[in-house]
Structure formats: C-alpha cells, structure tokens
Amino acid sequence: AQKVTQAQTEISVVEKEDVTLDCVYETRDTTYYLFWYKQPPSGELVFLIRRNSFDEQNEISGRYSWNFQKSTSSFNFTITASQVVDSAVYFCALRSPNFGNEKLTFGTGTRLTIIP
Amino acid sequence: NAGVTQTPKFQVLKTGQSMTLQCAQDMNHEYMSWYRQDPGMGLRLIHYSVGAGITDQGEVPNGYNVSRSTTEDFPLRLLSAAPSQTSVYFCASSYSRGAGANVLTFGAGSRLTVL
Image (cartoon, rainbow over all chains, first blue to last red; front, side):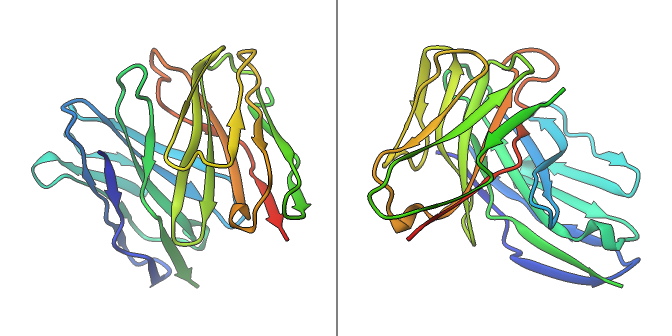
C-alpha cells in the first residue's frame, strides 16, 4: 500500500520569509515517482516537479527547491523569499510506474498563506 | 491545445438522480483518471483507465461508473446521487510512456452538490 503524509495542514508566513513544506511517503516499491502539485485559489491543479526514486539530487528552480531523501522517505519543498502569489494548497503525490498499477496517491495537502 | 476539458463546471442534483461528468483530452494521453477532492481528504482516486477499453477501480469507486470507448473521452457516471458525493471532481490524464509519463494534466474541476 502507498501512503503520503503531509503533516502540516496550514502554514502562514510573512512575505519574503522562507518556508518548507514537508512530505513523507510510504511504499514497498523500489521504483516510484514523487510529485508536487500546486492548487492556487482559482482551483486548478498545476504540476511543479516530478522525481524518480533513482535520482536523489536536490533540485532548484528559481525560488523553489526540493530535497529528496530516500533514507527518511521524505520529499520536502522549500520556497525561498516567499511571495503572495505562492499562496495556495500544495499537494505531494506518489506513483508506482508499473503498467497496470498506475495510481497516483496524494497527500492531504498543505495550505500555504503568504501574508503581505 | 485545449488540454483536459471537463463539463459541467457546476451541477446541483437531488438525491437519487443520475448524471454524467464529461472529460475529454486532446493530447493523445493513454492514461485517464477521475479524482474527487474533499476538505481535509486531499484528492482520492475514483477510477482510472490505461487505454481505450480498459478501466479499473481506484480508492473510492462505489457509486460511480466509467467507460473508455475512445482514447479522448472518459466520462464519469453517478448512478444514484447521494449527499456523500457532494465534492469537487477532477479529471486528469497523462502519457504512460516516455518523458511525459506519469505527469498528470488536470481539468479545471467540476463542483457537484447533491441535495
């Protein structure tokens, strides 16, 4: 069984502060993908990043960075110098890529509010 | 390129009524799926399909039917609506192979209220 835990239900930070969103996952698969999606107040779901289980390198994209650690089954997301436009619900997700079992399991999400 | 198109965006039903949420994608994605989003529950998989003619159940399939007669379309049918099915429904699709594999593209969502 697969499980994704986002223990932080809601986070509020003042604009320009850094913030880290935690994601812990459980899977028995040796090969899997991890994802982050953003859901702004408008409601759509926007893909942010995909990571496969063989690639533990951290990734940086502008103000966004991701820390993948297989030893602790975590895939944390950090926003540096937060902006009001970062206010959204963020979902971490896990997927086994085996054909016929292509289910994406989502965490319950973290609502991030950036205070101007 | 329209991406994933869901209709309707909003719907109010009475208990016991049936309806179909439509989902169409124009990206030639093999994989299509339906999720429901409820407060505090995240997104939960209802049904999914890995290709035309193939469907399977997700985490919360009861009360819903799907079919996949074409690559493009994946309708979700509510057989006899119940208040517990009040939710926001998302259709999503992706390639099953290649560089874009497993990256879901979501529709805009359909908000359903069952009275």
